Length: 165
Image (cartoon, rainbow, N blue to C red; front, side, top):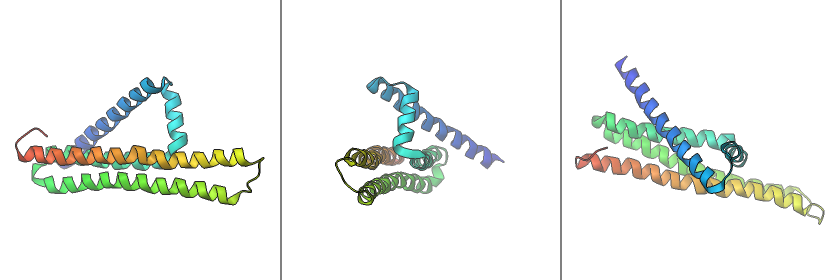
């Protein structure tokens, strides 16, 4: 029972960090674009899609959960560091996979249609939509993965020298 409570506590903390980061990102996006939060959320869902957002959130949560467990389980530092680093590496793999998917979908869209002066505008619109997915997943995923890796590695090293986690 005690283990279940510790896991629930770690999950709650990791979810709080994830939601806090989401709120700060949304606030920065509102400030930078002057769009309403609902418009930003709609654009995000349209560009990235539910599958990328869901997988990305799950992998970030896993890394944050491992980071929280690092602070609670000093005797299991190596295990939780590996879990967190695998989650962070999963974020970068996901970003690159969706980059290739977006490029493939864009090229596939281009290959399936006849290119005439009447259809050029619609074809370019579809192509740029897929390329937007491709490049934005990389722009979001790779820096996020780097931040997660740094958070985990620096926390472990800080613990080794007796600093705060």
